[in-house]
Length: 146
Length: 73
Image (tube, rainbow over all chains, first blue to last red; front, side, top):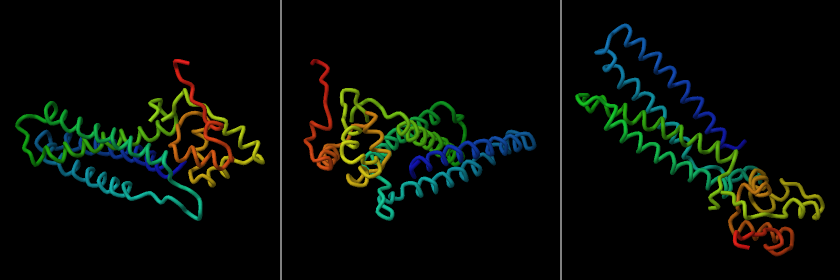
């Protein structure tokens, strides 16, 4: 298992745990403070998740070391898989962002609340798509011949 | 990434060349062992430069390593 695969697995684990933690925290807020508190706390919680996700993205976009002690760690196939996964992740990011913007966010919600939620959700979906795509491509390979 | 019409003789050529391991071939052509495994299994179609490097390693022509089966033929 190479660095890309390990990162992809770590991403999925992190996303799963943070999603679970966020749901628990927000449910507790909703239970104790009601809907008004929920909206007040939703933006900070999602902003925090988004910030951590962005740090993760920055770490992962750091150029891969191609050689270590003469051993090849990253080659043309890894690069192709990474680029393809990034394209799919961008599609996931923008489609989620637009979908959330038009369908899910309540019409009267203030933009300062909406933006972190939109960004966090889109980043979350984008990273999930990226990680799944990397793992699937390494496992199966696809058949488009490119 | 892979192409069902592309087959190869890498495994056979490795054994004909002193039972070369996948890792040794990978080191010689400058890729990871995972990539050699994927090429051998037909899951990944290598780039032209990589195909030539593999052929040069075995001192044969590219056509002796990779075969392309056209759907019409």
